Image (cartoon, rainbow, N blue to C red; front, side, top):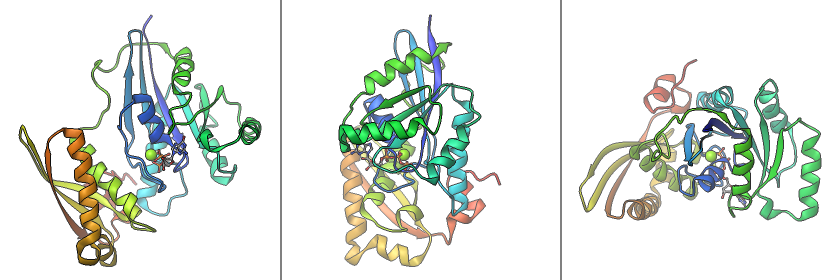
Length: 295
Ligand SMILES: Nc1nc2c(ncn2[C@@H]2O[C@H](COP(=O)(O)OP(=O)(O)OP(=O)(O)O)[C@@H](O)[C@H]2O)c(=O)[nH]1
Ligand SMILES: [Mg+2]
C-alpha cells in the first residue's frame, strides 16, 4: 500500500520550522535565520520513498501582524493548516508558554487531523527542563504525539519521520520522485540574498527588505545575476549600503559565495537598492513582489 499526505509545519516565528524542513530533506530548501519572520512563502519539501510520499509545508511564523505583509504571512500558514493531513506544531522549547502560543493553539482547535507537538531546540535544555516543558504543554492541547527534537543538530528526525508515516493514509504519489520542492531557482537565489541581509542587518531592516531578480544569465561555467533589494525608507537604503558601500559589499560577497557553492560555477552578483515607500502596507506593491494581498 502506498501512503501519502500533506504535513503542515506551523509555529511561532523563530521556532525552527525551516530548519526542520531542511533537516528532513537533508538539503537547504528554505532559508533560516535568528530573526523572526524569516519565511514569507509556504515552501514544500517532498520526501519520496518506495512506499510513501510525505509533502511537508514550511510556513511563515504565526504572529500578531503590524502590516499587511504580516497578515498575508499568517494567511499562508492558516492555508497550510486547512490543507494538511497532519499538523506539526513546532515550538522553541527554550521559550516559556505565552499568549502567542495560546493564539497558535486556537488556530488549530478545530482541526480534525492528527496534530503533533514537535518540541524543538532540545540541545539547549537539560533533561529536567525538557521534562518540565513536556509536562506543561500536555495540559494545553490534546496532541496526537509529542516528539522532542533538535532540528539544528539533526536529533530524532528519522524517528519523527517513522512516527509520521504511521499516520499517513493510503494515497497517490502526487509529485515525481525527483521533485524536492515547489520553488524554482530564481526564488532560491533571491531568498539566499535576503538571508544574507537578515544576518547582517538589525532592528527593522530585516523585515523591511524584499529582493527581486532583475536579470539572470547562466552559461556552462558562469552565473550572472542582477538583483534589486527593496527597502521602505531612504534612511534604510543608507544603512543597507553602508559606509563606503561596506554593508552591501559584505552582503554581496556572502551571497555570491553560497551561490558559487550551490551552482559549482563562477558567480557574478550585482546588487542594487531601491526605496519603495511603505511597501509592506501597500496592496499593489505586495502583489507585485509576489506576496499576494487579497484583502
Ligand atoms: N540551538 C538550536 N537552534 C535552532 C534549532 N532549530 C533552529 N534553530 C535556530 O533558530 C533560529 C530560527 O530558525 P528558523 O528555522 O529560521 O525558524 P522558523 O521557525 O523557520 O522562523 P520564521 O521563518 O521566522 O517563522 C535559527 O537561528 C536556527 O539556527 C535547534 O534545534 N537548536
Ligand atoms: Mg522559517
